Image 1 (tube, rainbow, N blue to C red):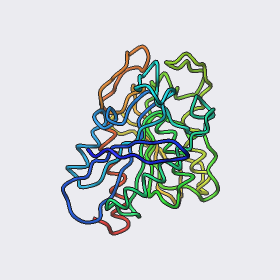
Image 2: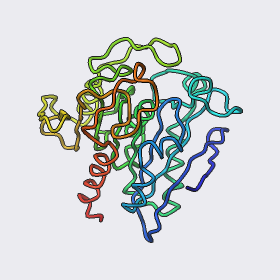
Image 3: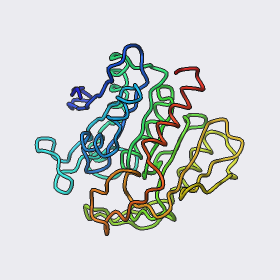
Length: 283
């Protein structure tokens, strides 16, 4: 992977880019790691780098901002996080502009041969929450988003939403399916809304009726608003915790729960993104 640096608001920001050995203009997927994670860990954990080579798209893995940028990132002592609009953590106190960072990264990807009409964003946990924010504030740049185990902490403007695939486990102790009080790995206590609230926000901004259709399919309950002009679906994975679906569990089970094997998030998300390309006549 190629490592790049971008200057955003006086900060040096970093990302890794994986480009397959294929000529021409290509789609691009930005993968946002979870709180405490790193870009390279996200690339390995999710399989997006390998998928980009196999399917022929560019994959980008940006780094969040650590509490102490002068020290190496560390999950507990010096976690990297994103300013997802929730007002949480050091990134909110420092007003880190992660939306501007993603926008600049998209510009760099286009310069490197990405199709400006086929830019996609996904992310896990805090990175999934930033994907929601990016999908709102960069709706004119992003073709679709796919947050995993995050929340939409911002209020999308009317009509300012893009196609959405939203994945979460119903046994996630850090994002309870019914919402509630959560103690984070860093000791803070937070109130988290029910994940369905994020879908409701997205559907409402798109002008959709909030009545949902749903179906159970191999351990995943799929739902989505009726009569929606924007493709939108939420997949709730039965028995799954706070883990990238299909990836390894990297933290203790008492903290993040168990991993179900009903769905591989990277496969499902890429199929969703690829369907958006097919709808535009892009192969």
